[in-house]
Length: 579
Image 1 (cartoon, helix red, strand yellow):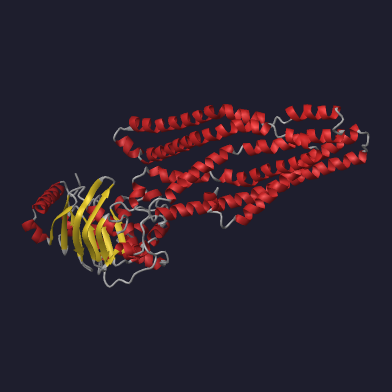
Image 2 (cartoon, helix red, strand yellow):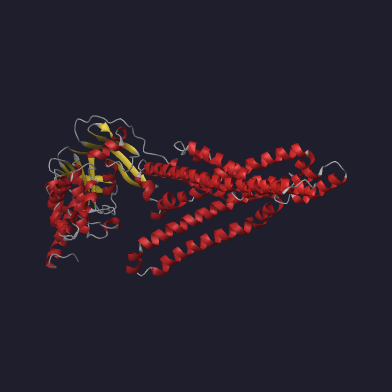
């Protein structure tokens, strides 16, 4: 509850009002008990009148009406507060993900964060909206009833509590089992959701490589595990839960014979006898209702632990105050980095000069893209130093780095928005004219106008309604609109066919004019004019220099160039189409 209330700063007033109206609601629900007691006593003692009974019935009706009305108000306020809290939790989670290293996100299954952000957090709404006001009220009202019973007859008041300690003998082990089994239930459910998302997202690959059986077995296993977890949860808690729900409401088993004995002994009046019997029902009912929130307490604890695990993840520690940069030179000084136990970069050093083109090439898995992601501050270097304009990048705010650097990868993500809004991401306050100018420079204006809805065409999830080349040009238009002084191209034409590659190369040439350009490339013809080409192999820099220098002194670059020329010749023989 402490963890949850940390997100309730904007709605504490609504929560307090919700609890107040919940108390009034349950208090109104108790009025019919007192009215019934009065009617029974008046009839037994021959003091009843038609008017008196009518007034008691009217009082009971008013109490019940108040119960319904105040309950509705309480529920409305508690739900408003609950959704405000869910908003705060989701905002905190998404903000946290922007501050942690990219590897923290990419190393987890694709559906895990979706499950936590959307499905798991949503499970807090119902228990939170009902638990706090209703459980508070259901615990407060029995206290009031007990005080009144104690006023009527202290002996019966104490006897009415006998079932509570007996019930607690089962409730305590029940809560211990809840903590163990409910956690497994939630974890199994999250795994099932993650496997479902992964199975659906990868269905094309699964079918293409005939992996339906294996992938379905993995998905079906997660579903079966979730089902088994739920079954084990209910089976293991059934005995204690049934005992608690049976024993605690059974106050009449002790109150009725005791009250009858006291009455026969002449130490208890008939009015107190009847009132005590009726009020004992009112004492047990709210307690039983409060016990039913055990599920909610267990689920809230488990869910908030998952939320806290993300919120407590180690962040990229950066200052908030922006620094004044004299230039945009990027320097690596003996930089090391690895993913888990795997060392990727092993002490590399180089300089990418401002307003010059620096290319990074090397075999697959050599660490080229890792260099680009370190420059973009997607990760922090584990050792050494990366400077931008002479300042250690760890001293630059992430927001400033994002403003300075435009990152164009081989597979840029497009949101399920219009083409106009996808391009506008590069500059949120851009005018439509600026967007169209950027699209023209990226060579995508014409194909956009050829679409039925032009710039208002919605691209689908991940840009699925567009071809790979079209998506790439849209991402370049976005980068042109952003107009950052540093451009990072991470194999931006890796999966592009020759026809689209020529168009994209023209778009890139417009994007990088007057910029500091860093290119990660596997098609060497695209970086032959680079001011400096850095050859990376197995996490180390093997050589660097211009293309003519590398062709003379670097064996690795020579072999890469020969392979590239051979592939290009083969491509030409096949009519310009990739094999």
